[in-house]
Length: 254
Image (tube, helix red, strand yellow):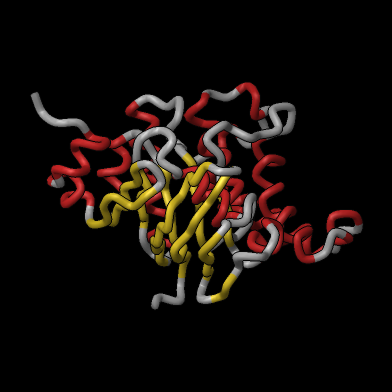
């Protein structure tokens, strides 16, 4: 059993009588980009929500760095270093890029004590500023740091989201379709930055994504879901070669 990273064990997620995730086990270790793919409705976002704390699974458990976090609320998981983004861009459009990114570290500090958000200490303000500047640099956002987030292109806004979760200090990133709305050029740029983050920080990434060009370019290992069940796990090359995966998701050549 790995200890560094995220593990979902025999996860079952239900909505009333509907079983959305049926006994799925997967691992996203530190220092690796792990892909989670499958058709719409396969259960990918339900797994994300169970792992991040937005919902509690009916059965199974979630481990983060060897600790059972299944019953911990979302803020406590964030405090331990679990961060995520959403398929729909969630930014404060009227705030500057810098202020949006700073919220990542401010939220992490507030998770440990809400009073730190009300009465900020000088050391906290310095920590937030340093984390924000570093995240802006990593994502190449220095030139737009003082612009309102709502005035930016979709590709740049996606990078602002990534910078915000990096500023939080998260050691495990759950990224839900980060290339949604991006063209191939922006997707390639996003993938390049993501690979650099994993190489430099040794963070783990669990990536839900439909852009197969991005998936095959950045993912070291893939899990494929179909109707809430695990259909396949292996390398990207093995997934492409799998008849089951092609039939269920990738499509077959004419």
